[in-house]
Length: 141
Image (cartoon, rainbow, N blue to C red; front, side, top):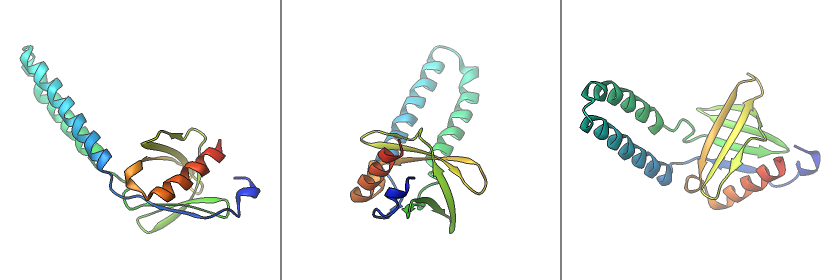
């Protein structure tokens, strides 16, 4: 981040639960159920059980939100991510993307040089903090 932005207001964005994320997950579950029923009706019963197991495992993994409760902070020109009581310095990627209802944040952990991402839904954070984040990401590009 450029030094001229280092004195602008800090950002402390705590990621909460999203109703929109839950709705999208529910829609995905219904779509998978429809596909499994279609496969069964077409006479491919031997595929239904393995596909059901794979689909169940993937849907269960998607239901978890590992960033719930995490805090994304920007202060004095530096980004940090606090998760499970551990604060890590991160560097945001220019590939981060914003939509009106969703923000995808790609980042690199500075200490471990590992990549990560955050799917942030508009209803999972306070509106004023979301606006500040959008400004920060716009300045990043």
